[in-house]
Length: 273
Image (cartoon, one colour):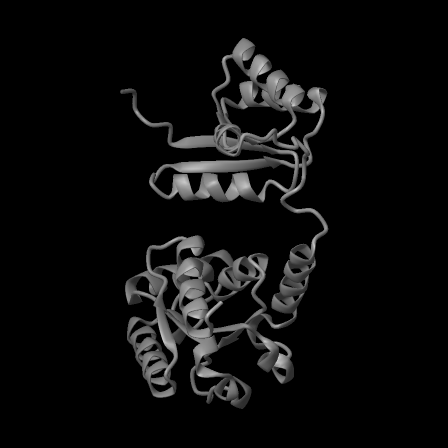
């Protein structure tokens, strides 16, 4: 086997939002430590559009992952890919075919059904708007309306997790724990089953904070990146989580999708959804 490409490019081609393909690619790439880039081509519903994507993929040496349902468009993509020697992965085709065989019915082959303007779609839009309004401790007066509340010290992935959960339809707020300040009363008043305390390995947190300071050209020596202070912050946070009966989620070395899955499982178990 040849040596792995350390700078791989993956194109996701979708006749909808591209969320399905993007999530599948991220889940697969977790298994590899190599660097990689993702580019998403949304609402690709014509032959000319997919042919252009394949042309770009050839130039970039990219793998093309597609989630398309219209037969002519799929055939055009695969034909163009074969001519240009571009590797492709069909995410939905084999599954749709098996389901059709099992049910003995013909699929609709209608693009964009997954993210049509259904009640679920509007619920997800509301959830995303809620997460944006309640990011980093904002609008605490309406925090009680959240399905899920995340809390933890700085740089424990509160915002990325909030946004991912919101895209799954959960109204999510996040509240930072600030050294030297008591946690907000509004946080303490939330149903404890809705609150999740995020923890992380001290070494990982220190590395993330140090990189953050470098990126903004901050001072190299502060309490924010002091190993003893980092340990103290994490210890205090864990004591707070235990005292309030909040479930702890260790985000160390895991992708956002994995941590979100743990939170969703705990939430649905608690509320029987």
